[in-house]
Length: 378
Image (tube, rainbow, N blue to C red; front, top):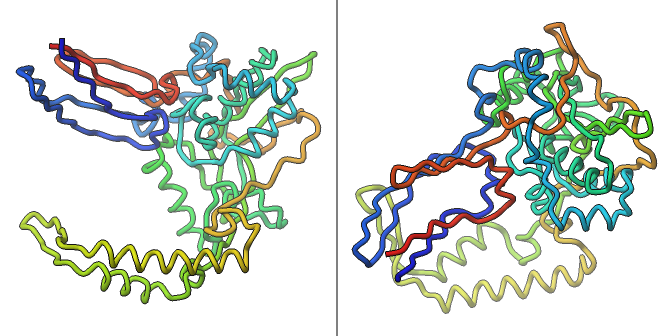
């Protein structure tokens, strides 16, 4: 028996965009496979399919109570994490708020497990992680609320509680038309549904958002782990640390590499006869310079302080909040929010795998970061 195992994809639940791919399987035996299709889609019945927020808000509520537990799955690692946080809802909330970076996309792609593994996720996935941890701690009366929330692009009070610092953007609102066009692109590039972004004023929008509710001892708390302020970290000039400038470094590496470059008719370029020894020598010299520079000037700096990035302003909560964090609006009238017990499957990305005339289907949060393999024998 010959068994051929092909690793086709890893950490699928982390995919944040639509992918259409064909992968070719080859083998040395007599078993002929040909092509198979791998299709990843975002939020199959929301996304850009024409469904609007208002329609979803008013027609889906009854079905949500029957939604299966998928995004909120409690793994042993999450149970251990909840226990290490003393099963305390305040500590659990602060952990998700302080340690999970916000990503901009719509719907649940990762679920609780991959959000925890990657330390990043949007409002759906961070909320799913929070719900999983709360339920692991024994707080089973948890769920979700979704609605349009209004907030400025740049907060006038200097608090940075705005889209600019929530989304970790690197530009201020100097021209609202340009800024709003950028935000409006979320519907095209990040799968936000129609009606999920409303222009309110010259600095404010209403954005479709998801957060968590927890009812305990007759009191309902509103927990919004994904809304957080992220501040930029400038980093240092790595070229300066290496004792040179970007152009001089590039030229030195090109000169050391030598070799000969070629172009093919289909536009692909390649090089031959690279001088690996010389190239290693130049890189070693820059490495030595950089290590010496960092040791002298930044001996205790973190990686982020060197290369730059963003840091999350920690939560100061010592108690759970009893009112929604962000103002809720509905310009179309009607309910302000809709409630879920679990995240409905029509807000989840999916994976469809077609092979040999058979179709396989998964919700990506259910994959929990597992690798998929195609195994067949001959």
